[in-house]
Length: 211
Image (cartoon, rainbow, N blue to C red; front, top):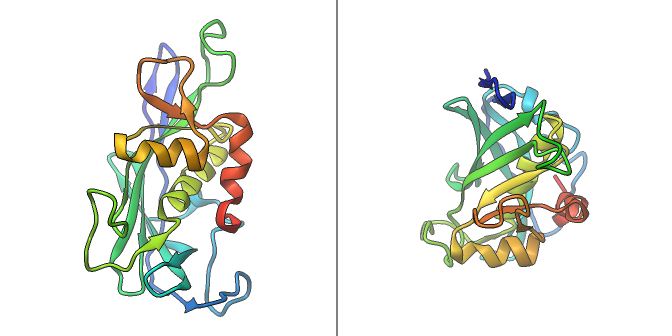
């Protein structure tokens, strides 16, 4: 599914996933060969059908443990929405990704390829410091980072050179700028949009051991 805008050849792609459930908790989780754990490490996320696609590890701050949580993927109006679910199938985080691939672009306006994944609706329901907090949930560390890593992987898969772009809420801006290393979009300095600079792409992909 795609949208083709003739002037700049903007294509928006969308990807799928499948559905299942499994999460393993331990103080020292094994990141390879741990029973039925299916990690996203070598997976082409865009080729997965809608539903359950695998697991990512998160630190459960409430219990002081590491857990594998489930990742689900859904279509959303031609885009892709990803969910992280705990062992009780409660949603602890989600993100909407929109793939914007520019086949032809104005070289005078853009020094580098402006193709990117637009990150929208990134929400962490387990963090009491966010407006989306769900009091029923344990507090997890790394939810936002994992969701950004998924968006970054989709950017690589869609040949958007790992570029991600987002418009942050004011309270979340310190996380994106300080922790992730995102900067104001130099091509649109008054838009409020943040981008990931080239030297921060690999560090983001390796945070918490990577996907």
